[in-house]
Length: 167
Ligand SMILES: [Fe+2]
Ligand SMILES: [Fe+2]
Image (tube, rainbow, N blue to C red; front, top):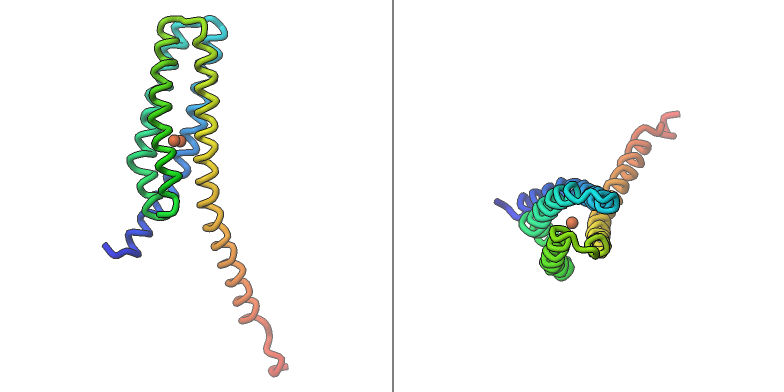
């Protein structure tokens, strides 16, 4: 495969991944709110069940970012390697914290709601930086397209303008 084809493939994978990643962030936020509401309402079994789904969804999300999306992004923008490595390291830290939250919810500890809330805060901050990274990548592409439209419009206008020497 030529380098141009390879870059086009990476760009397509990143573009598709961007929508998926953002949608999954919103889904994870919803899971957190659901678990927090169940704990707040004293619905321990519901909280445990939804927390398990939250954990599974989070692990699938990290696997997608670590295994597919970040490598494509690194191939497309080698300058982001440092930022992406930091995000991958944070996934590991988040996994470890999630285990502590899980034990807390499972044992019915009084501090489980506070631990969950703290975890959600760290996760939201992590997601925010990822969303910022996505936005910074999308912006130049939009600007390039807009510049392309302006150029086309100018060329079209120029071609359609009546020639003064004809009148
Ligand atoms: Fe992440
Ligand atoms: Fe993420």
